[in-house]
Length: 408
Image (tube, rainbow, N blue to C red):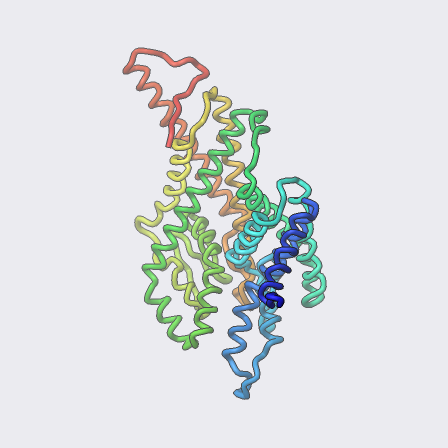
């Protein structure tokens, strides 16, 4: 008498499928990573859209607008890759950076499971994902959006390149022996730049959280005025989380001094606030609501962040010329990071005056770089003075090519 069952057959089929995947060539894992990244990133946005459609009957008849929900999810998915979305006749180009980061996290998780530790697997994952995004951007939407296919593909390449690389390194490790061929001053500069960028982002997130606490009543009043059901409220909360990284980038511009705009003719900066009526979006209650006084000293905090990075990052013995070159590399790293971030956090958030939202790209970037250079210079001066005082106290003189090592 046979003891086979459906469950046993399904388990056997699953084992054969897993064995087939493992027996496939290593490069196939890259293609699987890219294809699954496309599907899962889209499903992550489609599921809440369908939930809202299911909970909101159309015309009171009980039929859900499934096609509308799918269209919204597709538009948001493309918006996360830099393609402007059309909402009620208005163009929205402000990228929800949280959605973009979600795509990268999904790719990292998939690469950790499927991608092989080869350059070919990494390249195939990136090409597959970016090619899929470009294909969707060229087919879906209005003809005007097709001009953004190149931009969408470029964003997808960047997201996939970083996400897949992180996933492969987490699963298989990474060998960085080639770094020994890079000059010590260049490696030191990259570490200082990365440290300064991280310190500035942390400072901006802290400042944003503080303003959110100050504006908690405005946030609560806006959320109450919307009078949403449970499902819609959850989806709104998710949508607001998607724009939290964008607000953090805005806070970097605010700390730098020039600030940012939320509509034509508006400005939010430590020295002045010129605001206008805002859309009923609760998270906007976390925008700065005061200016002047001690707040005008906010840019000093960004310079202090660079000082901390200069003092905290370990570095080898360098001459003063090499040290200056390392600081120039660090400033270049910060400049590139804020240029990309400010560009991604700017765009159109709606019709009319909301067609211009975000920081002024060139002015805000110049301010951040200037403060970074000031902080790095102050940190270098502090180290030189400290070394001179130590030499004077001990009565010894350090060799010209040596520099005291400062650790975290």
